Every structure is written in C-alpha cells, then in structure tokens.
Length: 540
Figure 1 (cartoon, rainbow, N blue to C red):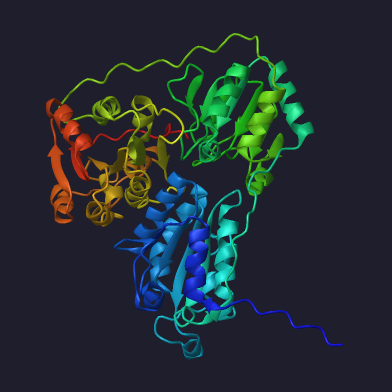
Figure 2 (cartoon, rainbow, N blue to C red; figure 1 turned 180 degrees about the vertical axis):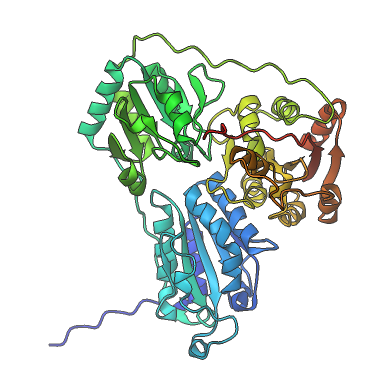
C-alpha cells in the first residue's frame, strides 16, 4: 500500500515570509538607503515595521549597529546592490570588530540577467563583504531566501556576535516560499569548571592580582557581576586597550585606569602584578611595535572570552571559553573574600583651567559635569581620547560606546541608532571635526526624527590623531592633515538641526546647557586649541 503523501506547507511569498521572521525575532526597524534592486522589497511597506532612511549606505549600517547595541538584538539592514555594499564596507568592518549582531541584506540583479553581466549585477556577491561577516550567502533558489535570513539571524546572535550577509535577487521577493518558523537558540556558553576553580584559587592566593575588563562585559549586561567579582577579589581593575564599551564604573575605588596599546607601556603598567585576569577582551590589542615583557612569563595570565579566535591567539596562560554572565557568576561562587589590603584609589585630576583658545580638557570636564546622569556617550575623537578618559569618567553599563575598528565614520550615525533605541534619555555624540565629515549626512536622519541627540564637534581644524602620530614617528611635512574653513553650524542647520558655535571658555556652560536640553538634535561646534596631544611615548 503506498504511503500517504505528506501535506505541503502552506505557501506565501519570500517577502511575506521574511517580514513574518522579522516580527518573530522582535526586529521592528529596517535601516537602509533604497536603490532599484531593492524596490520590490520596499513596495507596500508594512505599518508595523519602521523603515529608517539613511542618506548613504555606511550610515545605514552604523545606525543599525548603534540600535543593535542599545537593544541587544540584531539590527536589520537593506543595502543597494554592488556599489551600495561597497559604500557600506567600512562600517561592516567596524560592526565585525564591535561584535555587533547585524543581518545585512543587499539587492541583486534578476537571476535571468546575471549570466549577461547586467548593470548593477554583483558577481560573487557573497564574497564581497568577506571576511568581515560571520555568514554570507546568495541563496541558490528564491524559495531558500527566508531560511537563509533566519540562519543569518541565528549566526549573528551567537557569541561572539557579528554581522551576516544575504544577497537577494530583485525578482526573488514575489516568488512563492514556505513560511519559516522562528526557533529558540540558546546563546550562553558555560565555562569548564576545573579551569574556573584554578582561576579562583590563583586569584585567592595571589599577592598582587589585577583584573582587565573588556567590552564583552558591557555587551553582556554583566557590569554588576564584574563589580562584585572585583570587590570579592579586592583587586584593581584596568580597561583593556581600545575597549569600545564601559565595563566597570570609572569612579569606583578599585578602578585603576586605561591600558595603553603600546607593548612596552602596557607591560610596565601590569608588570608589578603576579596574576592578571583578562575578562571579555583580547590579550592584548596593540597599535605600535615594542617588546611585550608581560609575555616573558613573570606574570600568570588568565583570560575569559566568548571568542574562540581571541583565545587561540593568546600567547601565554590559560584561556577559558565562556560567555560573561555564567563565567562571572561561577567565579563569584568559587572566589573567597580577599583579605589583602585594597589598592590606593585613582587620583581625581584637578579641574582644568580656562584659557584662550579653549583647551579640550576644559570642554571635556565641563561636558562631564553638565551631562544628564542617564545620558549615553558615543565617541569618535581619537586625538582627545586620553583627555576624555581623564576628565569624563563613565558610570558603567550602557553609558559609553565607540568604534572598535579604528575606522572613522561610525559614531555620528551610530549615535542616531542609540537615540532611536531609547528616546527617553539623552544621547551625546563627542566627535572630532575630521571624523564628523565621514558621515555628516546622518544628521539629516536624526533631525527628521527629532531624536534627543546632542552632537559636540571638537574642531581643531585638522586630523589631530595624525598630527600626533607624525610626531611620535618623527616624520615631517605630511600633507592632508589640515582641515580649515569647514562651517559645521551651517552644515547642521542645512540638515534641519539647531546649531551654534562656541569659542570662549566663559560661554561654554550656557552653550552646553542649551545643547543638552534642546528638544531634538543640537550640534555644538567647539573651537579648540590645535595643540597636539601625544597618544604614545615617542619610543613606542
């Protein structure tokens, strides 16, 4: 007797199945910049999903990145075919380094035209964003698109999180496809208990231990656990080099400071400790050459990371693969209360003095005191980062973000994404004049949506970080470092933002008050001293 045929799943369209997936994944916004190959996806847009228009593809990716970081759910991006993906690649790279979950879709020419090298066709589309996406595909059949998007979401959300990419031909969206039910996939990874016991014993018996925290702690919303571990160990807490989040409150008595990305200087900072535990960061991110004496074997090193690649390149010690919440919870359970004396608290710097022209330190100190307690700071001012770390202590979880890649053009649109995610608190974007010009069009999106966003542009008329590096590297007569005569007030006003310029220290307090209380987007251009701060010692 023949077997009874299985009933076929009810069919829908690729587009309808995709929107049903977004709803099931609690994705309520799609960030994009439309092109002709995306029009079938964008037609008859549903009322319950918000399309966020960016004026350039790199801005769309960074806005989705900021929104994803704030909501801790994957951001969804729709890019134009080929050149549009190329425009976005810099911020796709940044999202990869930020470990931000993104599902990036891009248009593609019609399948029937692809053999003819059609206009806007992307050859080998899935290879274009690699290696800076965790998963990349152009499905073989139209009906496979929803399943590919579901897989892209699950992969993006698995630790370490990151962007994924799906190329969708223009004629796929209207084709029939079976619905794809959303699945539950767990994301926490528990640590190996024996390794955690060894770590707890090493911390308990150490004469002078130190903890180093990285961005994964804040990404996991585990800063409270991190504080408990530090207090149980009674150990100083350093921030890993180039950490893109705030994973420990910087006014806490155990906070020790920020590690430099120079091997020699970092080794000097950590050299006095017999046990160093790096939590949620690589061991270590360096930017300049030099001898890393920390790896010579005099210090016992441990690492807790959710990134197997970061564990595999660690040159010394024990790496424990786990996500932050279960690892810190188990460490807290195994770690006895330390009886050693607490380290001396970090000195609070004196208030900077006013002068003419305005010093960056004076502005940063004033901004720190004027910002609302619940504000989030998004930063892209690399030449002023040392001063910011000195005069703008962050409160801990959900208070700070910057780009982990070193690539400019992320923070201004990302700040719009953060503000979109939480319109009940102020988002402050602190950005250099050179950085602002990479994605200045993001101001238009923020203004159209009347976001609670304050943008402070630190204008020193040039690429200050490059001026600093030219001094460190002792090179002279470098072209292209000066940026005179850019009027950010007029630029911001042309895009619908309130804006003003401040040059004198005596006017700063009132200007900050207006900028931080404005109902909508306010751009404050601060004219600063162009003196070059040294980011590293001249000997590296």
